[in-house]
Length: 101
Image (cartoon, rainbow, N blue to C red):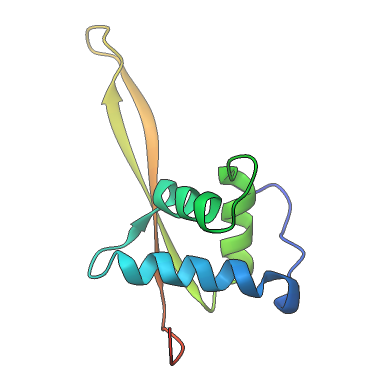
């Protein structure tokens, strides 16, 4: 969960928004996992380090009119009898694709 809102700047963020839309379109008809989006951004934007999940979620929240983020909780076994580890899985869908993308 993001602790601070993303300082939205449409001009500076345009390349990132375009790449996330591209990733979402490549995953159709399914939603793109947050890990898939992180990996796509790192490779296509030639970033020197990985994209962190919390800032990415803040970014997606700032662009809520463009992206729909679905977070679902699941429980994975820990290996100890009866214990489970709660986890979340987030997926991203584009609400609409601009012409030409």
